[in-house]
Amino acid sequence: MNRKGILLLSAAAGILIMGLLFREFKPEYIIGNPEKVSLEWFVYEGEEIAADEKRVLEIVKKYEARRSLKDFFPTRPEDAKIQMILEDGSKVKHIILGDPDIWYQAEDRTGYEIQNADKLLSELESLFEN
Image (cartoon, rainbow, N blue to C red; front, top):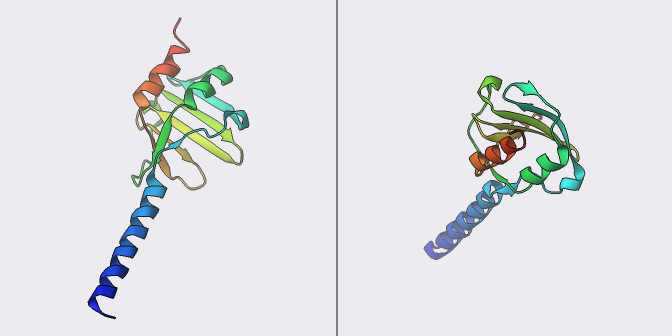
């Protein structure tokens, strides 16, 4: 293979790899379709509470997360301000806000870093202010 062919093949491989990485790590909404999601468990500052499912899902659906290569495990529940479990079709999503700000699926333990997590935390906390 001549030099030009090797250069073209290398460029094509680089573009393909960059495309795959972009697709894998681009931000995606935490909840794709709120009508198919249910809130199974909600803990605020260490206390399990009955949160308004509709209001919680309306808030969470606006936020995105990006896949991360960091290892977040084990997490310390006492470091979380809010924890919740959502059933999203066949996926069970564990959401932790505080430290770290992630969601993950227990099956594969892949962490997704929540974008604008401070704002999400603030919106959820506003549900419990008197």
